[in-house]
Length: 343
Image (cartoon, rainbow, N blue to C red; front, side, top):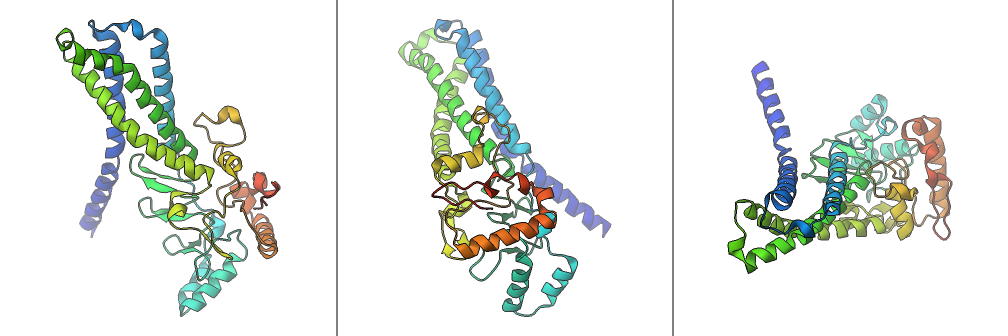
């Protein structure tokens, strides 16, 4: 048995190591691009007229590189937002749930438990429940099979960062895509004169460094094309307050499915992700609004408003506010006419 456990642990460790291959690839490309741009293009190539690359070009390049690396680091190593313990079924509730027979009995138990929790999105038959994590799912929360946990406001699992993109690091992910795109465009346009000179007068451009620079131009163009579509798509999602998962499957409220259920208007949607301090918008520092558990909704009838208010009060009385900062959630008190914001 010990040998089997050791083998299983070795396989798990090997699998975890393999997950870092895409990250290593991206880091390798960035390091190589630095060598090709700074060393080969600007310093080592005597045939190239470096007067068109003044010092401020290198300054801009390094600023972009720092912001790109910072955003990438934050996206990778920011822990995913996990579900507070108050959503987990107690031992007594779990035993009662497992002993119940039939789908209807299970849903009745979940409905009773969910009454004390600020969760309004549901499945077509009842509250959203994760059998693997044994808890009620908060709004916009989903289980990640790769990470093995439920992630708050999960967008998707990204192999290129070896992490889930969700409430805690979605801003960092958006900035990473943006800075990566700007970085590639900057490299492509500033290396374009060398590329043109190579084709006009190929005999005057010699040395192995030319292949680095030429390849750098093609790689930056290819990455720019792929990044602009991905970055543009996520900007669209931010402005419409949807996650990638919600774009494919609309969240279900008591009134039914509504893909715009969390849409508060473009500016408010943007502020929900990037925060209300404009000086921090372009910095990979966490400034997202809310607690990752409760979210304002576009439409809410009086019954739902009353229900959520009662649930939020119970949630706070049971210690939910202490663990998720609900008392600091600006949505709990803000009402933006004509959009009703509640928590």
